[in-house]
Each structure stands twice: as structure tokens, then as C-alpha cells.
Length: 362
Image 1 (cartoon, rainbow, N blue to C red):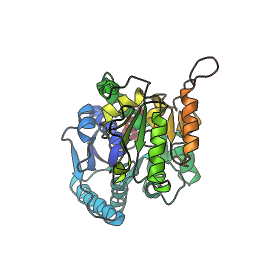
Image 2 (cartoon, helix red, strand yellow):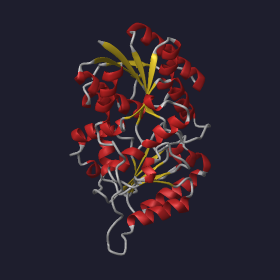
Image 3 (cartoon, rainbow, N blue to C red):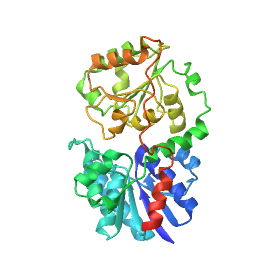
Image 4 (cartoon, one colour):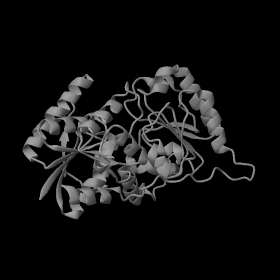
């Protein structure tokens, strides 16, 4: 039986790996080995949802600089590849574990497949953009989640027979988690009612926090909460930013710890809109028809803008407040904005399509 190593890190990497690992196990045609970062908070919930409890290897990203962490990823993946002897390594996503896996496999003479391939924002100062480009340059097989991925790869010289439009594995994970958690009254836990609150997902390393002064961010959040109750959580290390934001005693502006994925998606489903600084929930909000205001100038998932619910608002506070007003204000007939379309093959069945290709090729 062929053995496949699936490697990736962070929330998106694990969300790509989990449904694919599950589909490969159920098909019985390949033996999948998942490699994830040590200590990822999402591991337990996603593992339980997709039958991966204790069924994955962990890799610790030691070091204080990007080069040191990438080196640790390469060394760790080299050891895992040496012991597991896979027939194919799948780099899932664009983090350092996925990139390290692609590099280690390539140096070891193994074939590499890129999962969620071809996504581009064309900002070469973005480390993950560099990882995406280099992973795709190394890979022999490319599984894309939207049409832009296929167009980008073919424009970069990848033969079209090496590109497979499978759909978005993030939506497979979303569907699985919502089957488990969709009945939770997550909004009620915070004293809110469905569609009568909004979410702000901030990132202390994000562009908005770096560009504007802390008091501008605080003013923006309070102005939004004057229009609709607001749940605020930070997507990564909260740094020192919390000290600058006054939340105590405010019933309509609440800071919460970042929820686990099941609760997070339930809160997102029931929110009036999402204000996001790093865009990590662009795909899920589009599928759940929740307007998403992304505080970036570009996105690597253009389908969420072209036919989805996503709008890029940058760091312009006035633009953000104006867009929020458009979302909350019904049209002249008393109806809210109509439903956006769901991108093709974002249907929760991407893993099965990838397995079908692997069964044929590997």
C-alpha cells in the first residue's frame, strides 16, 4: 500500500489536512501520515471530528528567527521522511511546515504535491506568499481550490495536466465541524442574539495595527459597537495591544479568547458581519453568506470578492464604517443584501476528489 505524508501547520494547514486524512483512511487505497505542529490549539477538536486522535506526528518549530524556524521544519521533516519512507509528500497550505516538507522531500528525491495550490496575492514582502510560490515551483502535482489558482499556475508555466481543480478543503472542515457544533448557542453564551452582533478578528502583527495608532483602533471598535454589539478576539499572540483597549463594563463591546474552531464557526454563522485583519475566515464567511470586511489591500482568495461576500477595506476607518452602514441598512424595499454565490466546488467534497486523483496517479 502506498504511503503519503500530509504536512502543514496552523489553523489553515490542519483544516486542509484533517478531511483529506479522513478520506484517505476511508478509501483504504493509501496509508496517510499527518504531520502537524506541536501544541496547536485546534488539534483536539479537528482530530475528534475527523478521527485523527493520536493519529498524527508532531513537529516543533524551534528558533527565534524565520530562518531558524524554517531550518527546524526542514530537519524535522527530513527525519520523518527518512523513517516513514513515503511515496508522496503533500504540502498542505503555505506555512513553514508545508514549505519545509516540500524542500526536504525534494532534496530527498521524493515527489511533492501542493494542496491549495496556485493562490497568489503578489505581495513578495509577505512570507507566506513566498512560501506559496516556492512550494508550487517544487511540486509535481497541484490541487487547486479555485479557478484563480489554476490560472496562476498555468501562467507560471505549470503544465495543465499537472493541475487538478478539486475544491476547497477548508469547506470540508467547516462542514464537518458544523455537523458537530452547529446546534450550539454560541452567541447566547456572550449575551447576544443571532444576527444582532458582529465579530472583529484582529491580528497584532497585521497591517491595520501597525499602520494606525492604538487609539485609532480603539476609537474604531467603539464606533462599530455603537452601531451593533461587537465580539473582539485576536488571531494570534495578543502582544501588548490589550492594554490599550478599554472593554471593562461595556456590554456591547466584548473581548474574548479566540474560540475553538467549532464555536468560532458557529459564532461566524450567526454574526451580522465579520471584520478581519488577516483574512483567514474569508472562505468560510463566503460559504455561510456572512459579509466579510478584510483590512487588507489584496487577497489570495479572489473568488471571495468576485462572487462571495468579501470586501477589501484596507486601513481606512471611514471606509470600514461606511461599509458597515451599507451592511446594516436595508434597501429601499426593506430587504438586506441578497445572497452571494458560493464558489464552484466549495461544497464539502474536495477531499473525495483529491483522493480520486491520487488513486489514479500514485
